[in-house]
Length: 165
Length: 352
Image (tube, rainbow over all chains, first blue to last red; front, side, top):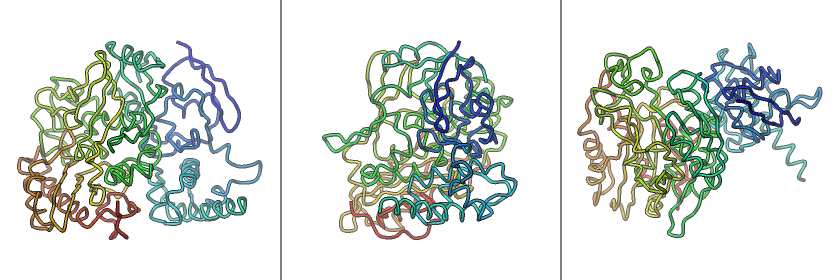
């Protein structure tokens, strides 16, 4: 069976011919589109390293069948910076030492971007920790991650307020 | 993963026809099914993708005051629907206590009801499991079984149903709408799942091709909004299945309990409604003594299925805690750690 799907990935339309329906969104990004910033950790939906935004919502791309996401708008870590200008969440992770080895970081950052746009956690560290619990960090950089998310949340809310003022 | 055919029907009747064929399975978000397929536990020949079926993604307020939740509504969308969460706060809290934010953004209402047990022996294809391969035995009986069932289990199977969402739903008399080859029918959620008996592979009353299209909560379920809680004890604070959990919903007039709904999670192969315990609460004044008696009644038939005697007392205590918190009143906002027994005292009360 051959299936053709078309996705918007980081703002660019990508048409992909799938020769196998088993391909996950994660494998499609990494193996077919060579966007290897999205990481394969557990491949079972337990670690969050594969987190991307699909139609603006953070999901585990390892548990998403690519073929079922025909037409989706996907944002990966490669698509969040503007040229050399880091996304505020990326900058905050650096400023707060929100990483050590860095393997989980693309997933952490995509999850944080999703969390901030969901607007449920606000500036409560406990709600941030709870909202980020789907992203594991074996290096244990959680304190820096929580600080980075709170800081980025604050700067994004402030930027939005400036824009609407 | 075994390969499969993939079809994406445009109508519910085409989906039912496609899924009625032997070896077919429905695909919604796939957050449980894909994991099972990767491990070789589920080996469908055909996936019938229901994500594009029309009309399944709505939360509808019914004229009689009830609510109808489409089977494709995502867990996060339901939990954060302001009107739904205000009317059915224990259901919203249960949803937010399950899985992770990423999974809640994908996982669906219908999929939650039909998710499979997380018994490690069911997941390990090298182990004997009567549910996965009927007649092979049950390695959980003599294995790591401290988290297994204490109610309704059989020698053939001691697995539990892992859902949080189903626990307050079953307490509130939720009804499941099913489209099948013979048309539409309804089943009480309490009657959807089978206990294992001699046939643990038969998990629900669904027949081949049957598709859950919606879950309905009756108008009466909204009467509990002021005193409804879900509590879930986990081995870590977040992103873990329940060791035991409980939903309690009360209607209290001048300190007297007029109506009570109770259910337990993590204790059996289905969400466990505790009707005998509800009866004990009726007409009583809310307080620790009657809560403890209700908890004793709820677990009266419990027996350990292995190294899990402790879960019986844990379930009694979580019921007492849930009743105590429900009697105190639903918090205005769900705690930072939803359903956690370790959450700090809740703030202002919710007046529905």
